[in-house]
Image 1 (cartoon, each protein chain N blue to C red):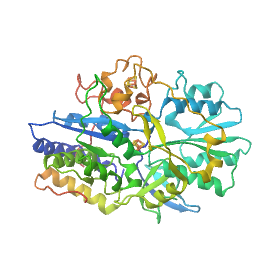
Image 2 (cartoon, each protein chain N blue to C red):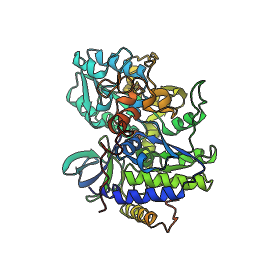
Image 3 (cartoon, each protein chain N blue to C red):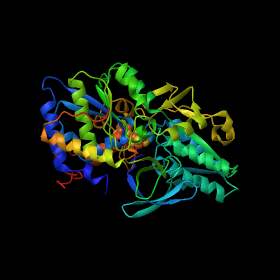
Image 4 (cartoon, protein in one colour):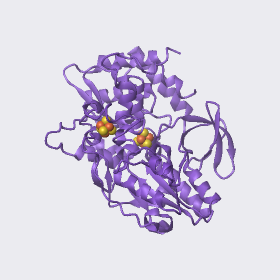
Amino acid sequence: MKYVDEYRDGARAAEIAEAIAREVRPDRSYAFMEFCGGHTHAISRYGIEDLLPANVRMIHGPGCPVCVLPVGRIDDAIRLARRPEVTLVTYGDLMRVPSSKGGSLLKAKAAGADIRMVYSSLDAVKIAEKEPDREVVFFAIGFETTTPPTAVALKIAMEKGLENFSIFCNHVLTPVAMRTILDTPAAPGEPPIAIEGFVGPAHVSTIIGMEPYREFAEQYRKPVVIAGFEPLDVMQAILMLIRQVNEQRAEVENQYIRAVTRAGNVTAQTLCEDVFELRDEFEWRGLGVVPKSALKLRDAFAFYDAEKRFAVETVAAADNPACECGPILRGQKKPADCRLFGTACTPETPMGACMVSSEGACAAHWTYGRFREHQKGAEKAPLRRAS
Amino acid sequence: MCLAIPALVTAVLPDAQAKISLDGVVKTISVALVADVVPGDYVIVHVGHALSKIDPEEAERTLALIAEIGTGHSNAEVAA
Ligand code: SF4
Ligand code: SF4
């Protein structure tokens, strides 16, 4: 596949691995967080950790919207879906996220709630158009990547004059989450958060561009390298981070120049600015309540705001106390450190969100990483031989 | 939930829509967020919307830089 296969070349990956091995300083260690679930997935699937020297460690960050959505909002969605007049429309990834009472959207659907999965935000609008007697609520989640598509759907629903369409908005902001991770002091008994740089999000950055990461380079002195999702992209970004650390530079660099520009997607930015405004605060799974970290519809669009239309009142609900999603999302623990991992908690029976989305740190470790200690390299998608 | 991959635009449709081919699978997506899409372009598609176009020259440049890393001769910096 064009623009995919050529970035999966095994021989090239081995060459970058050699360059990394040449350039790392043996007398120090390197810890980088890949913010995006897409990177976590690539690192696990292609066994990139096995190609890195022992003193280069990758920390899996909170970059999957399914992983960071708090339980209370899943409860809200289930309550909405149970209303007889409501059709709840959502992305498939959300269906199995556990609610506070051991339920999920999938279970609510099995019990009779009208919940439908869609691939695109525009499919939600189509359902509203076709079924004017239903109150169609689009359960919108995601980072800056998924936010503009929600705004497009809203605008189209307005143009069509649909009165039975509304949005349950759960969009969250990447740079604020990165800042929160750096600002969170370790809780007593927890290991400290030691991050020396970030592999910056791929598709989030197609929208927001490079500028929003500048504070991490300038104020926090943490290098950021925006990277694509293919294995060679990730390897190259890690090498670029190592070089920055070695040269004591902290800059925002862009490895993903084929899709990300400095300014980002200005059309999308303008549209989102028109439709959304900051919430005072929002709860994140693993990060707690974070001020100004999420979006809601502006008052001008209150008519389309499901929270107002159905008087949604989120009740904060605690995660399963044994689940270590929190420290895992903050980069303090690894999936294998959770005592539920692989026993009570598997992709078939997820206890926490990190196990639900295939990009979650626990699910990625379950699928590709479990046997690493025993059978190095087995179970993984092979990188292609030289092309 | 955002493992979007590059898809080939095969036709531009009215109402800011386009037909894409993803390894032979044909889909209709929205191109409301990306200006001037023409057949033959590759776009990053996420939840049914094109988010950005792939720049073929920059794609080549990345591959050239990766090849250079392998030779060990260059410390060339990618992108400013
Ligand atoms: S293994 Fe399951 S319970 Fe443990 S941290 Fe991961 S998702 Fe949570
Ligand atoms: S781009 Fe966004 S949604 Fe996709 S994996 Fe990264 S953080 Fe998650």
